[in-house]
Image (cartoon, rainbow, N blue to C red):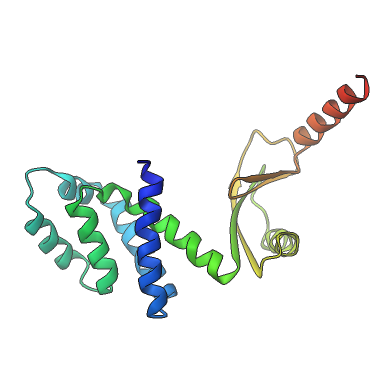
Length: 181
């Protein structure tokens, strides 16, 4: 089974638990911290994935390292460690965040541009796409792509909105080809 599917299943379960306790945003913040800790400490993943480390030691270690997180998040980490799926932490956090955003009417995306967008430009794009996608809020992360000649390209999930000059030229070329047929 694909790792993304497995991570989504764990995220769904944690989402259900957090939703029952009305603690979705708190759980999301805790998961972001957990993701950051795992991202900054590669040895942590290596230790928890090592076959010679017993499950009891892994659980005791997680209890010690993540003392401030909720019981649900800690238990999820323990289950991941025991089932040899601790490498799914990052995917689980991303899937959980997507579920929280969907539930609250928030869409996340990435805007690719040749230069860093100003706050006003980014806010204008977010407001425009919130209306276009019928969402209450759109959050865009700005990524600089030097291959873009001009314009912007926005990725929302699996959908790409290509407003780059090269994208427009490709569409014109396709229309000309279709007109000549």
